[in-house]
Structures are given as C-alpha cells and as structure tokens.
Image 1 (cartoon, rainbow, N blue to C red):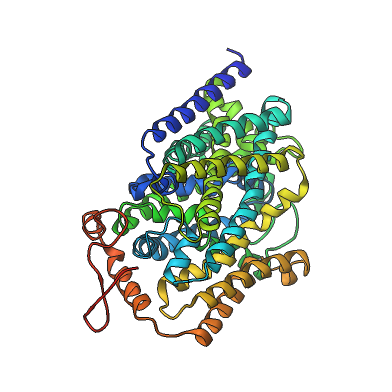
Image 2 (image 1 turned 180 degrees about the horizontal axis):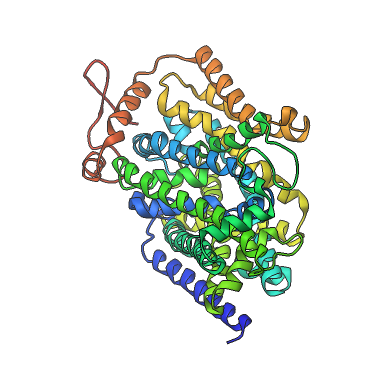
Length: 529
C-alpha cells in the first residue's frame, strides 16, 4: 500500500466517524439547552477530554514540538503556565460555575450567566459580551479553517482552498447537525487520538534510536543547551525573568475562555468537577510531556540519521517522525490526529459563537423560548452564518487573521477571566463593575500589543487581567447597593457547589427553575423571577 493511499484511507475513516457522531447527537437534541449545552449531562470524562481537545488545537502537535526542537526545553514555560492555569481553573471555577449558572436563571452561555448573576436589567453585559465573543471567535474560527487548508496543502500537496473547504465542510456538518453533544463527543475521539499519537511517537523513537542513553547522547551531541530551562539552544540568549513571567501568565487565560469553561457548565453536577479535573489534567500532562518528548527524541533521531528534519521543517518533527517510524496506515491516523486537534478547536469556537449570537444578542431580552423548534433553528442558522463569514476571511488567507489569534487568547482571558472569578467569589460585584472591567481587559490587550508594542516584553494578558480586575472592583465598590435576592442566590449557589447529581436533580426538578424558593437572610423565602 502506498503512503498516499494509506493516509487517504485513514482520513476517510476519521471523517466518516465524525459525521456519524454528529448524526447520533442530532437524535438527542430536542431544544436549545441540548443544542448549546448538551442538557447539562456531560460525564466527567467527556467534559474533561472535550475541554482539553478544544483548547490545545494544532499547537500541541506542531507548534510546541517545533519550538522545543529548535530552542530546547526553555520553550516549555508556556506549557507549564498552561498546565497550572488549567488545574487552577478546574479546581476553583468549575464547581461554582456549574452550580451558579443553574441558579442564575439556568444560564447556558457565559454572557447570559453574567447578566443573570448580576441582575442586569439593561442587558448591557450580555450584549457587549456577546459582541466580543462574536467578533473574536469569527476570526478565531477563520484561522482554524486556514490551518486546515495549510495542513492539506503541506501534508498531501492538495490545493489550499480545497483542503480548507473539506475541513470546514465536515466541521460545519457535525456542529450544525449535532450541536454541543456532537462537538463534545467528537472532541473525546479527537483528544484520545492526540494522546495516543503523542505517547506512541516518542516511545517508538526511543526504541529506534537504541534506548534513553542513546537519546541523551544524541541530544547532548547536537546542543547541550537543549536540556537547559534557562538558555535558548543555538544561541547565547538566556531566558529573561520577564519572559518567563509572560510565558507562565498564559495560564490566566483559562479563567476566561468561553469555549473551555462552557464545559464546566455542562457537567452533570458540581461534585463531578473533581473527577473531571483529574482526568483533564492527567490528559494534559501526558500530552504536553509527549509533545516535549517527541521534540527531544526527534533531535536524537535526526542526529543518528533515523529521520531527516530539513531546514525550516522543525514544526513538522511529529509528522516526519511518524512517517519514518510507523506503517503507512498508522501514519495516516497520526496525520488525522493533527487534523483532529485543529477541528476540535474550530467546532467548539463555532458553537460558542453561535450561542453568543442567538442567546446573548438576538435573545438578550428572553423573548425566544428555548424549548421551541425556532430556537434550535436559530442556533443552526447562526452556526451556518458564522461559518460562511469565517470561511470568506479564510479564503483569502490574510495574515491579519493569523495575527489576531496571537492575542485572542489574551483578549478572552483578560476580558472575561477576572469577571468570572469575581462573579463566583465576591458578593459585591455589580453589573456596572463587570461591564467596566470587561471592556478594560479587552481594550488593554489590544492597546498593549498593537499600539505600545508589548512594553517590558510582557505578554498582554497580564496587564489586561490586572487592570480589568482593579477597575471591576473599584467601579463595583462605587455602585454597590445591597440586593437581598442577589445575595441569597450567591449563598445558594455556594451551597450547591459541592452537590452531586441527585441533589441537583431534586433542586431543579424540571431542569430550569428552582423547586423551592431561595431562602433569604431573614429565613423567609424570596420569590423567584
């Protein structure tokens, strides 16, 4: 079997599997809650793997191994920051967000949660947050389509536009048809594919080289600084303190990424966040370590002539290693793992953008009933509309889109991260403070990079996060007025933050409203809206 045939067979199997999952999810999608949040019925494993797969994208299989291959483990500070941030987000945000989003009007999006949590009667929070999500994620989705086109172009010599259309078509199909369930379950398959590939490639490389001793010998012979956490290989440049701080600050992004934290909201219960965290961080650790090992073993394999990584091909070390070490059909699935990383992120971002359009812009005033056929139709139309718009941008393959992705993570992290934390942990946050902080975070990220040129060499998420936090607190202190209902809901959500599935089912018997009233500070019931 030729290499092209084997790879084509693997790709076809992968695409068909994704479409079948989409059709299966379609049969289980009855209303907008199902379409956008899977009916809050994700198991810990599905939620964890879905969050991980939708997060990492092609960076995990190409960007990170490529950086480590060229510069050494000094490039691992970002991975360390991301792992710490992911753990902290699962630990602190996930259980409270799961309980509070249901207490606060059964919110199914991040903007609707903020609006309901803070009783924003003007709907300003939902609309502004929805617009931020729509703008940033439309370009983010577009960049994923670009990555898909480039993947087919580089891996198969296919026309860029044809490759882009194939990737976009399959993602749109299963997202359009199956909604959140389809996205989550395809993420599980894609996450497992990524993990399998990242574990097996370095193991096969170690065997081919002749053991760990030979791997160390090959790395040392190439450049001993490859194993130095504070020095860039191939140069005398050392990692500055500010550079390390900037790299670690990437972890702050996890507190505000809508396509990741929506998985917390979809768990069956707050209590299951603990198990999900263990699964998710376990997957992340194995994947990141596998990516690093792929790069370092690749250096040794190249040194001994087992693989040939040409000039400028460092980001393809995973692909080159797989092609040299495995049969063609397995190599095809290795390539499918890269495509899976790209597609899992695109589908998650596409669905979040759709939910922002429908739930937070079109339906900001709650005129559209979630259990109506029209609500799902609007959701699917929004997916299609955003996909077409993103596809138009991707068709022209403009550099501005790719540059925007570089600070989109910072934009979401700074705009939403501090507000989510304050909403879950501080009773005195007001809608005015949240709105001011959200805008401050987003603007700071843009100004810091685009106008100031990253002063002090500091990644823009850190000043954006800090400024947003300070502004939100100051404005909230100036505008705070005690509201017994908001305070009672805060207490009630906090009490449910450790609840199991049975407790949540009893408290929310119909899946939407509280069975009983919230009890106020005076021991008397407070009527629900």
